Image 1 (tube, rainbow, N blue to C red):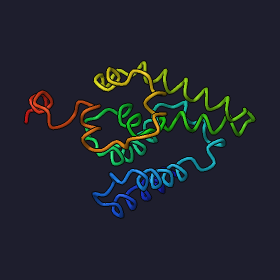
Image 2: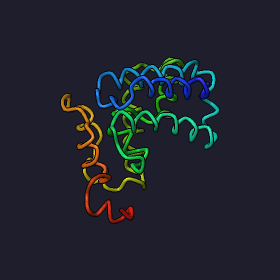
Image 3: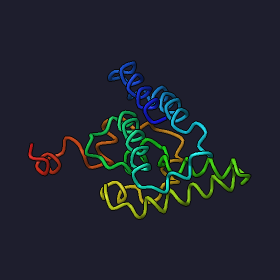
Image 4: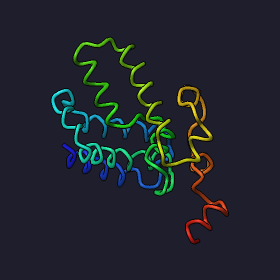
Length: 170
């Protein structure tokens, strides 16, 4: 499953080239990759108890979120996911499973938001972004403004800034 998704992400990356900042198209292509990753998730979601499986899925999602936000590779996975507006893949998998098991979608969505906010609050990487955006809901529900390269640099603290360039030895 992850091999097929990785091939799809690579193909989509070649197709998009450097045009990932076209927000709507990038989100659509990411949704296609996520559909491949999450195929039959209620049947295999239990393997997410192992940290290495979560890490493998997260690395696939990370590649697409970095492309969508056109952020630097040094941006944390949590920050890239938040800037792209996509919950962490393991939370999406659990969300899909509990809906499949009969939970009402609205309740499952509320639970997903709460778990994502909890993970965001506990995130120990990307300390700049949580200071800029401590609460996910107002940021993600804003309904306007795409995340461009400049915005992702500003919100992540990774970009053409003197402090970041000095820290990274450039």
